[in-house]
Each structure stands twice: as structure tokens, then as C-alpha cells.
Image 1: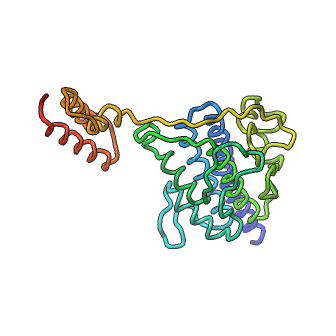
Image 2 (image 1 turned 30 degrees about the vertical axis):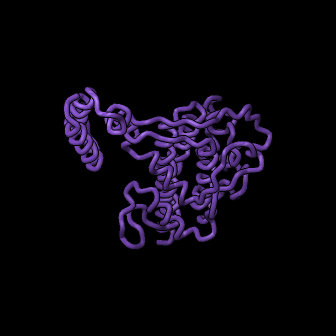
Image 3 (image 1 turned 120 degrees about the horizontal axis):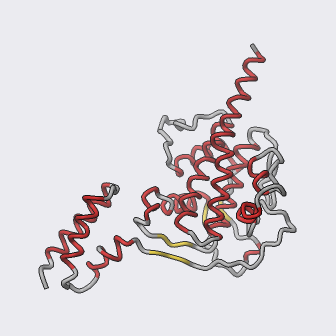
Length: 278
């Protein structure tokens, strides 16, 4: 019976690794590639997905449900609730804030707690923003903050469970040879994948890694819904109002949107029509 129990524990761990930790490692590298390639919408989208899977791995590998929290509230895909669940078991193992490294002097850095960053990441990586429904504002430090968040949550998944992997919550923590992340960044990994995982990565890259020039600045983009419809309301009435209202109707009728976005578009169409023909 003891053998059966130990075997079941091992099998559960294998499922948690295979479904969540391993896939999170891959999605995390994809997110970094997107940032380095200036594909910022996809950086936030994949960043949210990697963090969600790391949180679920942390819960499962420490003996907790990844479906419901202690109050029986479903986690679903809510990254903020998942992080709160992880924080409840991690105690002091999660950082209070995401701190600027000494090597990052000279770039913009807004002091931010882990919870605040995750909340902002969740908003920018909202499923509907895959379509640039809300637009985005990219900050130069966001990839570095994702790196720190991943290290912290990943360590909860492994270190609290007494697994061997990074073994540290400090910079340049090297994953164990058996981990998916180590295989991705190891000498046998594809050069482009290794670059995506390690370039300007101050927590997982070896100390002697040549990062190259730091290419990052600011970037932002409005949603086309804003520039083609909502922005009309901030401008003087014109002959463009009626087509903009018709366009809002077309979007509501033909594109699946969150209910609050539909309401805002319907209200915009109503106001545009009230302004009357020019």
C-alpha cells in the first residue's frame, strides 16, 4: 500500500510537470521572444499564460487544487486569484516588490509589487486584447519584471516541494538539467530559442552570457475601435459621425465582444447620431 501511495504521488507530480510546468517554460520563452522582437501584444498574451501555468504548477506540486482556492472560489484563468492562492502557501518565498537590478540603471523602472505587476500583466494580456481591442502601453522594464515573477513563482513550485531545480531565488539561478527550461537554454537548444530565453535575462542567464545592446524603449498602440469610432466623440461634429456610428453597429453585429464593450460601442453610436448631420 505504501508503494502504491508513493507511486500515485509520483504520477501526480509527473502530470503537474507535464501539463503546467513544462508548458509554462515554453510559453515563457515565447513571451520573451515576442518582447525582443517588439511584438508587444503577444508578449503580454504569452506572459499571462506562462504565469498562469506556473501558478497552477505551484499549487499542484505543493498538494493544493488548481481548480478552487481555499474558499472554494474557482481559479479558472484568473491570474490575480491564482497568485493570491500561491501567496497563501508561499509565505515569505514571494518578493514584496520587483526591484531594479544594478545593471539596469539608466532604463525606466517603476517600483511595483509583484501583485501590482501581475494585475497590469493580466489587463494587457486580457484574452480580448489578442485582437488589440483595448490597445496597450509597453514599458521598457516589463520583460525584466516578468523574469523576476517567473523565477519567484517557479521556485514556489519546486523549492517548497523539495524538488531540485533552480535552488535559489537570487539572480542567475540555473535550472536543473532535467527541467524543460534547462533543455531549452542548454547547449543543445536551438540558437534562436536560447537567444529568446537568455538575452537580457538577468535571473536565468549565466553570468558570462553576452547580452548585446539593450534595444528597448517605449511603445504603445490604440485600438482601431478607439481611433475609428470613440475618438470621433472627442472631436467636433462632422460628416464622419454617421459612418462612425454605422461602423459601431457593424462591429457589434459581426464581432464577438465582451458585453461591456458592446454597451460602450452602442452608447458611442447613439451619441454620434445625436450630434446630427453636418
